[in-house]
Image (tube, rainbow, N blue to C red; front, side, top):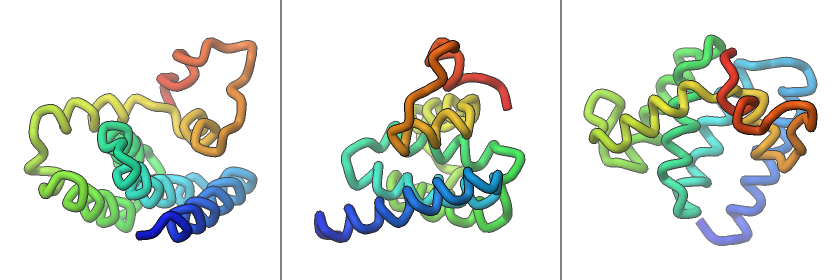
Length: 127
């Protein structure tokens, strides 16, 4: 994927995340989060991609489509599906399952975290 295509894809994913967040549609946010991880993997951030895949799969709004997409991205990133992840990838995946969806979406969209809260506690807040 060329740079122009990556930028266009990110723009579309950002807009989808913004809209689904605005209407409170967690199912779509989680599914788009799984899509977003492809870009992170291509940008040389496979560990962050694995964390966000962990969040996407562990979130209560995860659908069967989310699981299919997560496994497809995992195969692209690691050559393995969920059952065959190497230990270091499992650690990132489990760490991601503790992340807060809204805080991650804010981060991806470049929005400021609420100033009254410590950013670390916001990112790892229980759902």
